[in-house]
Length: 469
Image (tube, rainbow, N blue to C red; front, side, top):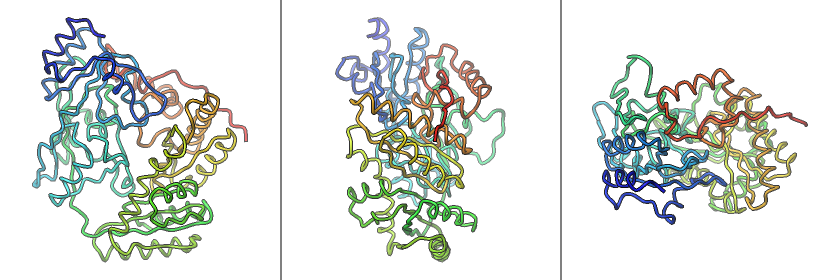
C-alpha cells in the first residue's frame, strides 16, 4: 500500500478510474502466464499517453518505487511478476495503431496493441509482419518487443528484433528518448534500439515503436511429414537447409505432443508417428510448388513413411493452428504446465530431443517436446502438479539439466521466451561471468536506482550440473 501522498500524486496523473490498489484487483496483476510464480504489487496504474508514463516514472523515481511495465502478461519467464512489489504500469490503454506507412513500408504502434489485431490490420493493407508468437491472439506488440518474441516463421523471416526500426521509451528518471526511425541504415552511435528490444523493461519503458513491414506473399502451401525415428526427422531438417531451401515454417512435434494435439484439434494428425514435421512455404506459386516438391523428395529420402501435402491454403493453415495449440492441448493433462525453450544448433536437434527424453526418465517426470526445428528452438513442456512439492522439485531439476545440456551442445538457455525471473540463475552458463558483469553495468547506467523491473535477468548463478547418465 502506498503512502497517501504518493497515491494522490499517481491518481492525479491518470484519474481515480485508472488506478487500482484494492487487494482483489491487485491479485490479478500478481502473476503472469508463468506457473508457480506470484507476488502482489502495491498498485496498478493505466496510462494513456507517453506523457502519463513519464510523469508516473518521475513520481516513482523520486520515491524509489519499483516499476513493472506490463502488456497482456502472457510471457513464460516470470517477466512481469512484481517480485519487489511497487507499481505495475499496465499499458492496455495505449493500444493504437498510429500509422501504416505504405511508402516506407513501416507501421508505428503503441505497446498495448494486440498482436493478432496488428497482423490483421497490416494484412488488410496488403502487407505482412512476419513475427508470429504462438500467443499472438493474447499478447501485445509491446510485450513482444520487450521480450524479443519469436514465432513459427523465425527460420525464414527472423524474429521481433529483426523488425523493430525505432522506439520511443521512458527512462528510469522520466526522460523520454527516441531511437532509430523509418530508416534502412543508421549507425549513429550505439544501437539503442537493439539494446532495448528484449531488455524486458529493465532499461526503459517502451511507449511507441516503428516496425518494418514487407510485401505479402501471393501463395502459401504446407505439408506434413511423418517419421518412425527422431533422427530421420532431424536429418530432414538439415538436408532441407543444406539444399538451400528456406521454408516459411519448419515445425517439430514428438509423438507425445502429436497425440495430445490430435485429441484436442481432431484434424487427422498421425498419432503413430515417432515424430512429425509441419512445413510451410510461401512466395510466388511456381517457386512454392518447386520448393515443396523438393522438400517432399528430401523427406522421403530421409525416411518419412508418409508425406501429406495440403490441398488448399486453408488446410495448411489448419495444420499450423493445430501446432500453435500445442501448449493449450498439453495444459489439459495436468493442473500445472511448464513450457520452456532451450535452443540448439539445427544439427543438434535430434540429440537434444533424445537428451530431453533421457532427462525426463531420469527424474521420473512427463515432458513432451515440440518447437521450431528449422531454427533449433525446442519447447520441452512438463505437465505436472504444483501441489506435489516433490514432483515439482524433480521437474525443476530436469529443466536445469536440460538448460545445461543445451549450452553444452552449443545452444542457449532461451531462444525466444526471455530470461526474466525463471532463467536468471542460468544466464552466466550462457554468457559467462564477464558477460553478466557487462550487462549489469549497462543496467546501472540506465537505471542507477534499480527501479525498472527489479529482480529480473540477474540472479545468483546456479552451480553447474553434474550429468550422470
